[in-house]
Image (cartoon, rainbow, N blue to C red; front, side):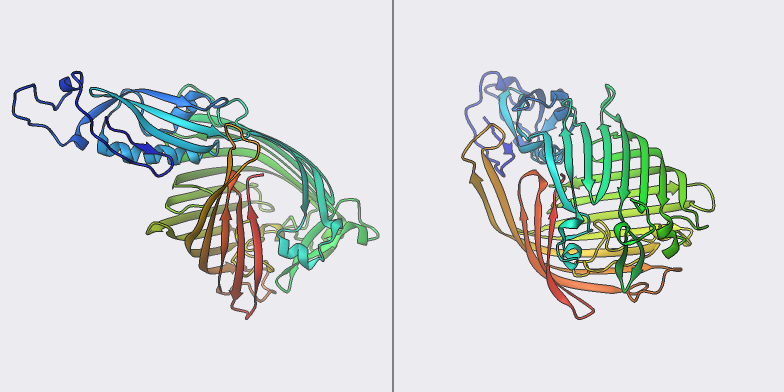
Length: 483
């Protein structure tokens, strides 16, 4: 009997006497004859049945959709190791499971059965929402951790809503600003499990607006500090429908079509009359269409140690001279394992917006979202063309689990992986029309070292001490999760 398992790094092989049934398998000589066997690892075996355990919500066919093999396939044993690894990787990156184990269940001559054991995550998160409006913790700290700058409300994230890896989100947020979001994404709407759809609606109203950048930092207007301003300085509304297409395992295509509306108070216009429009309008309505291609082949998407992933997005926003813009975004990450516990990764990100003459709101580039250099968190760099590379060398220093006092089938422990790292980043942002800040149109470099903590539900805590070319250094903290 041969047993192999992928899920916890186990692969073992043992040999037992060949059964009478196995003697009839292709490649085996009849009794009394001289053996003329092909190497055991190269013999073809047929996958007869795939057994799945632990999926109380997720449909069996959704799990089988992620596997590089199916019932009826003929596979050599030396190929199964790689296919089990890829199958585990695909299932982990669905973000539906806490743990995945793929193993050979039994042999019947040249027929083999495969067993898949999964531990499902919690899928519904009705959670209270409490978060500062600032773009990161360092920016909030510059405002003295003011509680007036807090948004609060409720977010309902219902993952795997019908057991087909679909997602329903309903966000109701108020406080310093307001936001209402309703979205639903169904990746598999047909029997081929290749096509899906999504719908999204979002409304936001903000009492504070950033109409300019001054000294490489955001300059804000507040509605309650302006005597003639309305209740909200900016309101935006977007809606879209999308079609998803996934022909294989690793590549996804998304085509999205929708509309956008943005309206600003006259107080914002007085500070920057090109804030949302090239011609100085205070309200714009525009159509938008986009195409996104995503490729994913890494061991764990939120924190890749091995593999390659990339995303390319082309956007057309508006069709007139006032709001019209083409935007191309490219992002790629390549990671290499170094020994048993080490890894090196390089991440490339770039954006270009054409024509270069755009409203100020379309010049936000470096320092927003995940487009930032480590060590430059306090600054923003405007631009319509920019790119950066982030390079990280890491090594695992601790790997342990903390048992839960109340155990369940899906959560009997909380795993922690802790990495020490060092890094160096490089970036550039070009602006043709907003050039008054010193970090525009300049090559920027940063470096540093830190600790990363990776745990359940894709939570990654990053503790970093960074240096930049301005002669500054300091400690920075980042939290990444999907909530």
